Length: 466
Image 1: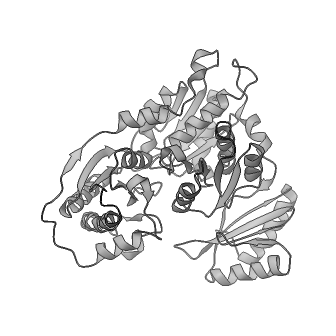
Image 2: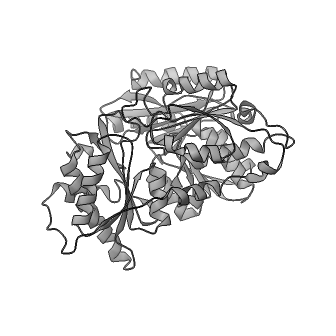
Image 3: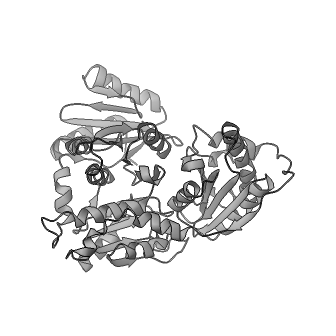
């Protein structure tokens, strides 16, 4: 069972790896983490928000989790079907001791999992918390609390809608701005429940796969894979939509396509949203992950902001946001973080921000620039996707690259996350997987020809891409 306790969550096959009994024990173990936090803050309540995704087995897993939490003496606010960002919001907004979402995100139907946060939607990760939960869940079961907790079913939908729509620029309602046509692919996942919010944004919504179905009958709920954007791109082109957005299984990530059906890198979306937010808070810090195009920090500086690179992973981004007061952050995986959202990620807030951007894009209030034209100034370089290689000696392989490209080649070395080595006209980042014998490569160059040459050069050293 230990293999299901990951760097940021618990995730495994149901019922072979994750079942009701283990979910119950994880609920009891979570109490130990809450107690440790409570020792530092005596005023911290002992209530936990619990919610779940659309998988059939999320229902019994959620019930078992609640049984474990209450057995350990914690009260539960059960908000039912919800996206992971809604769980984060409820945890922060309601002032609870933590939150747990039952979900396996974009994984296939036979998987399930648990995502955790503490008070204020602070993430629980492998660096802080997951090992504590694992140790207590797999160890000797403690005696039940003298006074068990209770479960209260509640709804957060109205408060969450008010929160999300508070980010919407409503000046378009008073003008002649045409209604945007938004194609949205929920992939039969939890993004489905965002439909009322999307319609409240004043768009003509073109919904795709907006039926909750944990078997994912149409395609995998992972918008990072190009094949999962094909249906959305086709709908955008067929219906002449202004843009398209695809959500992942638990609704915390989003990927965008322009009016031509072309995917837009999440790093470029990070830059665009940051530029808009910096109009209101010039000089603010913006977090971008280390794999982002050079165009991203350039654009942030051009708009009066301070770019801050960060290693991959939501716990790192959120911690840096809290430490620096950054106004916004984004990752290549499609996570977008907002300071006014408890520094948590929210796909629907990213959609609102992009809609605001498009509505302000034209030279007058009566027209809107094409999304492809808005992103064009950021397409300054040729960049690869993330390429995976199976490598047993990950450290040794990375050090060989350091020797060749930094020590001997004169490149600027950064070890923030794996290795990143920069030259004047190209750079690359190689970082190890936390859970698999994989190295992940991203590179960028000044021209497509330079990119192709450098990619072939690095591939020769790393092996056959997966």
